[in-house]
Image 1 (tube, rainbow, N blue to C red):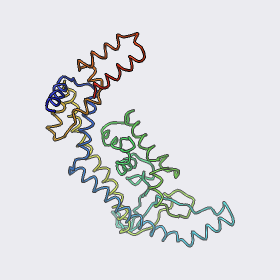
Image 2 (image 1 turned 30 degrees about the vertical axis):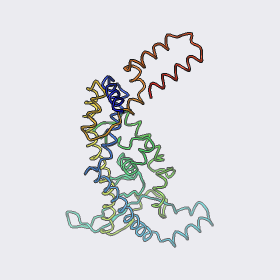
Image 3 (image 1 turned 135 degrees about the vertical axis):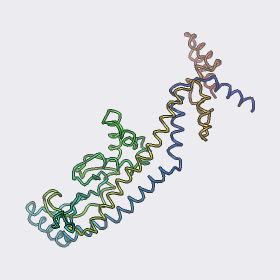
Image 4 (image 1 turned 180 degrees about the horizontal axis):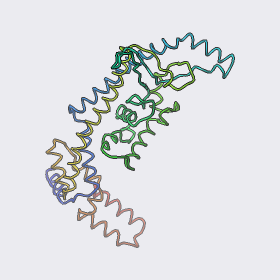
Length: 330
């Protein structure tokens, strides 16, 4: 058994690094980085829990404020009129975004002024108070559903990784994949599907009127308004904590790439992982990298070359040679 381990180690030292091995080592080590219990990761997880708590508070409050402005009994009457008279009475609709306003602040001259902002409870809702779509709504969505997107082979960290870069094909490709996985169609579209639709559904409320939300600011008091702001701030905080956490991983990965690129032999990469406290199964790396074994293991390489020379082998002989080759890998 000891001789077998020594032989494996000896074989490993002869194996030169290639792109496949570097990628496998990089992904294994990166996976450990992403699952380490760091302060940054814990802050991200806590920020997401806070979002859930704030959604409960703010959505419950929104229901109270909206129904105060548009009483359910009035909504019911108008719906009955629509049923009776048709399109002319079609003035009730469901919405998940609202302009809330209060008039308890004073301007520089001491006069009462209106303070209002747009609050969107949808998954892709804008975080800066505008009624128009913005990237930060998408940034919140990918941070909130990070694990789900990872499980779907998407890259939910793309915004954080590319925060200093302008739009580029790489970023666009991964953003579009995430949006498709989430069920995004457009910012104002109520036809979102999948996770986006499931997320949005609880926050739709009945409103009266046919105009856009900008012209139907709903009155609330200052305390209520501040609670809505607290909820929206929590969403922005999740985006910020996500970026901070991914930044720390990105910096580690940048150095990791430099090191792995400089290493000539697999043994150096294994040593790096060990020094980082990461256990890597060398045998698994070697066994799953047939190219490395084929090129650098003399016995396997000789067998392969001989097989290539035998142009006129029978089918049975070729099958037998292939079986022997595969057995040598194990």
